[in-house]
Image (cartoon, rainbow over all chains, first blue to last red):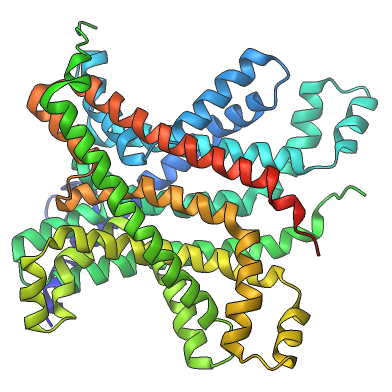
Length: 239
Length: 233
């Protein structure tokens, strides 16, 4: 067993080549490793939340063309592997835009577009799961449809969706590993780099990487389970 | 955007054949992994029900670990790191075979089995408890009761979520291209780098994946419509 290989590179796995130069008092190197994976996942879920909220509400719209756009987007993305989507944004954006898009940005967009479709389905399920009386009562008090959605339905629905959002966040955290395929220097990429350089400790390296991902995802999953139990108490129920 | 589309490249000739070969490999690796993952997932789910502490712990650790680590890392682990776990002779034999394919199948199987185990467990919980008690009372052993009474009913309930796990597996199988298994995604990428015709290659591959997804979703809907509603407790 060659755990020293892992130990010597643990800082690279955790935050990449980022370094604080104490002589010149400045930060050198680039963020990478686990920290970059977390940044990618956090930015991804933030973007996907807004995109998914829009897609989910559009899918519930009564206007056929609005609904059609959402259905096509959601079904198209959910039927495609994420890797395919990453390739679309990475290899084909330069042709469409005329300039190269950096790896980080293009994968981030791919993650947002991909996760947005799944969040859209969560939003739709969350809104339709509320009793119909909520909307009717809100409209009955004189709120417009938009106001009723914003002030009555969504605050309740979004709270019930929190566990599903956390699960989606876990998925996305795992999916950030795919960014390594086009060269974003996140955790999986640092692992393959160190593995290619050392050549003698693949078992130890990949077990360590898996453990790091596991730690984050497992804490999140456990939180989601706790939330699920906690939130069940506040649910408005139909008869 | 200046780009002249040339669809003939993916519809005829050598590159068309590449895509077909890739699709064939995707289907092959998916089918094999689906069968193995369902078997392993069932085993892991039943272990959790045995009331033997060690087996329950093993099952819990298995599902938690493999569900909470990325598939890509698992693929790299089996491909690069698994030789430590096996004796020298077995490794030598494995390297003579199609080791990339084997590592891909193992990774997809183990990863999906963890998800399938959870689905099956949910299905088993949905079966009223007195089913097990009644079948034990008729003289069946624990395994027989699961084999003949509980699992057949549980499977009927969980077929829709199970099939969507299969669909996830088919989509996830695109990751095996990273270790050089020449599946559909690998071929699309290969055509892109040979011809710079990325649009055509990726569109063709994406459409093929979409058609597969569509067929699978339709089969779930059909099942829900025609079979599921007959099951009542």
